[in-house]
Length: 203
Image 1 (tube, helix red, strand yellow):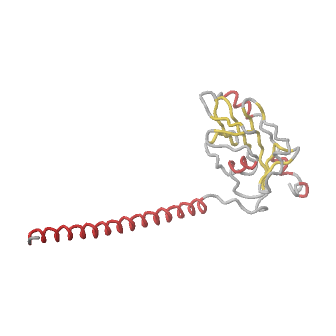
Image 2: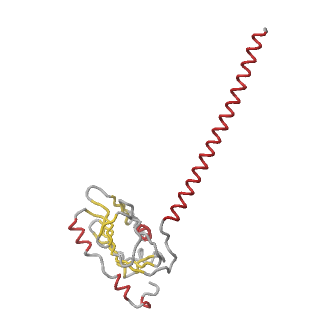
Image 3: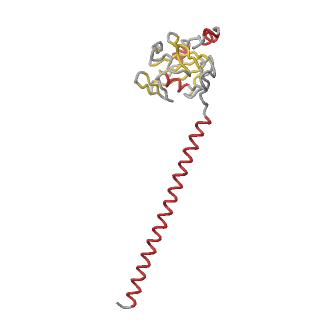
């Protein structure tokens, strides 16, 4: 083997060694970048979760308030009969009473509408309502309306307030019909609030 051949093989060997070294360095760099990316995502996720926890209204402890709200749920042309055991006393934070299911009883502050509807097992989204396992989605003819004190809102996280008049309505966008249904909302929350405190004990 002549000297040129030896030198050529040595160069090839050195090049392969250099290539392996560079490959290892790139692998280390990629691994480091991946680790930093994962760490960044974890930190972001934790930060976002904490922001959600501390920026959103926190449901207060049971007993932090005692308020009442008028309620009517109207779906597909029918008033929903809430005077059933499946809807009564579903939570100690906020609930309906058997035989008094047109009034929400709040026993904690900062109860969002969506949370209360979930407690009744009638969950709502921005564009749907689910009742008895059937989901009613908005379409060309029907819309989900959330009406508080005669005004339509688009926030299902609305925090319920004392003596609100709440209508959850799935149906056509017919203003005259909506006005007629609004008139059906009961007006009993203020009556319940006016009762002697001992009459509302446990309610």
